[in-house]
Image (cartoon, rainbow, N blue to C red; front, side, top):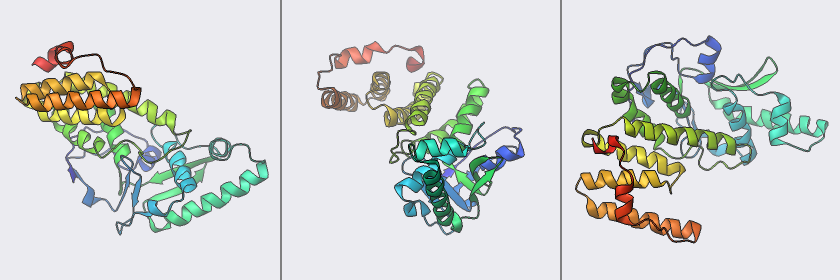
Length: 289
């Protein structure tokens, strides 16, 4: 799979470049997965591929996976790492200081051992902060996607940038829900914040697109929304209108029927908005372009 990305130059400090992997200070005309020695995939299940394409995430115990993720998520963007105190409080709450120190040390040693086959990914402790550092030879889909989302926002949803970037962004996001198989109470706020922001942006993208020229892309964006909110009524209405404008009335009706069944299953209640009302309820001008 290839990601073709047109990006503008960004000034980023060297420390941020290392933590975020891709060097956004350069202009990226195209990104191919094959051009990177190692990869971290966060959409769907967590995968960490070394230079031999071996998924070392399979060697992580549930606790080691949590350790990797909590440090990783605190090493991105404006965050430079996580303190020992906060790390211990998240993963080993209630332990005595000595027990926590021993347990933490053993787990970090084991995590480093699993990551030892990777040359572009490391666990570091600097300035009293733990961090996961990745070089520009490592592709991380989460870093890339969040960068593109921010870039589109900063451009005020520039039409040219949307045209060149949005298809690639949607392809990345449709790999699956962020960290889909990772369950931890401390992780929930990250997923909730990301999903809320992403859904909001998805509807803004749709509002900027003409349906006749971009029906397929709009449906792909709706698929992204459904990964995080499969009972989103606005997404349902938009999807049905796109399908109807494409002459696929039966598919629109099937989409509605499946939504009603899922609504009944999850809420133990009847969805009261009819098929006809669902179609007419969303009359945003962007959908009728």
